[in-house]
Amino acid sequence: MLKFREDKIHRMESLLGGVKLVDAYAQEEMLLCEEIQMLQVKVDRNPEVTRFAVENIRFLEELRRFQDFYEEGERDLLMNEVSELRAQVCVTTYYIIFFFTVVPFKYCSG
Image (cartoon, rainbow, N blue to C red; front, side, top):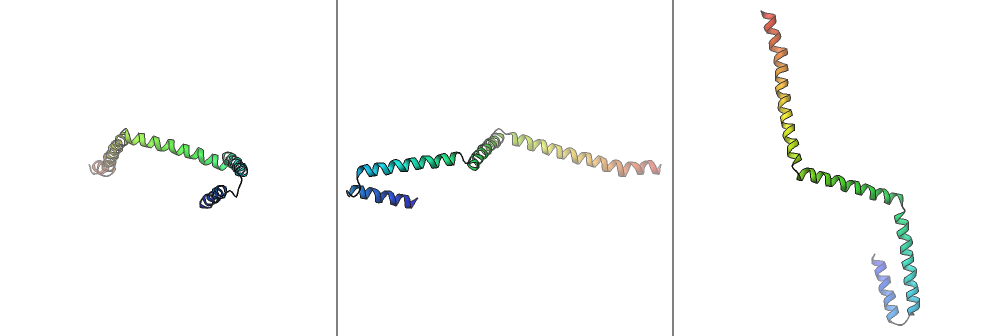
């Protein structure tokens, strides 16, 4: 970037000093614009750049979904559901342990 800027400053100084003709400067500028357009076409048609662009769009959409999910309180709702399910698992586990340890002894001893 810095080299391009220095080259441009040098060309402008040459133009102001009368060293370079205005027509030559305009022609050089036109050639540089054409080169920029050619490079832009190469970048636009590069499959890797296209793949990265599509991937970035997909990531942005996913980020928006997560932001919406968080902002609408759905996260809290799901956290409450998970807590309730954990409680149910604990109760069920307790009953299973009780059934397999206490109940068989009750029937065997009587």
